[in-house]
Image (tube, rainbow over all chains, first blue to last red; front, side, top):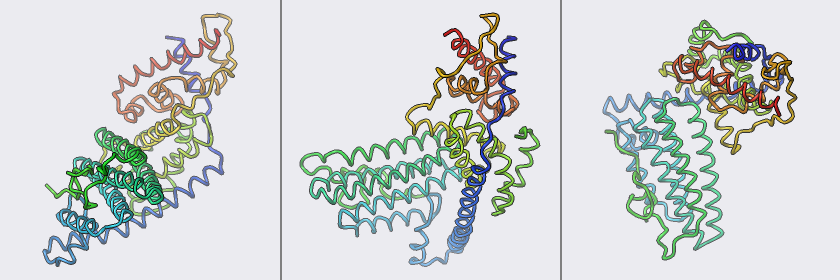
Length: 239
Length: 188
């Protein structure tokens, strides 16, 4: 026991290692830039959110206005189901493989933003759905890439590169988010989303199954019943 | 490095509110308050100044730009910052594929007059840091928080999400493990 106390005392006497003054200044410059950017984003987003909420509560939002406003709506918003309708229309208008992949990647980015917002609001159920939908979109994009690599290898490779870059960006964002949350359920959901995103890269790199069965549903938005895996192909309405 | 007492955590609250309103001076005060401490924490884990710099900057950036996630979590800001630093360290290990352990082979361990007794007073700081990095993740964390960061068992418990009793038991086991590591080196 005395030995351990002596060891503890010795550990207490270890001099702290300090950063160099240059590192500290460099760190502050980077942190300051991030704080400034964060403040700018906040000041931009608050008026939009206030405007949307005011319009909904007043009940005077016209259909065209509602459609536009729904683009920024979140899963806990009344306008969120409308966002799904708009996304389905957008998906139906994407014809080329390149447009379809871009569409899925755009939706994946939207779902990630929604998941972040839901975690911040402690709505883990909605965050979990958004993360699941994010992975579905990435998987649908991966299946499109896989199929395209067979019919047009050059275009397929280009699309695969876009997919890999998008997933790398998402993973970085998810890793940052994972480092900031403390709820074990949220951490697990984010870890699972990262794993599934990594699987999408593997899917895209594999050759498509013979017989052309590798294509996801005809509509890029997916119907969740085709070879695409979108169980939640569009935003989930508020319950 | 200033000790992190309860008062420091309480003082953080008005600063956090000011940072939320975009006050850069408040952000600077919090940065000055925690950067050295977090750098020291990460350095103790990784043993590389470059990595410690990067992760300390990353931790402070996340801490000061994602205060929306800190809200209502029921923990002190200091605990939250340490948790972010810890998660960043774990993430760093994962990206590297394995823990970046510094080998002990190069360490020169002093020998006590009594062979069964470890001459801890004669160990260099770097020897101790290197030996500490061979312990488990939790053992490293508790020893760094308690002895390098000079936190109380209660503060360490809040950061680690454990009870005070569990932290004390973990600390005891960690010291035992560290002693065995150091002893093993002197006998080789």
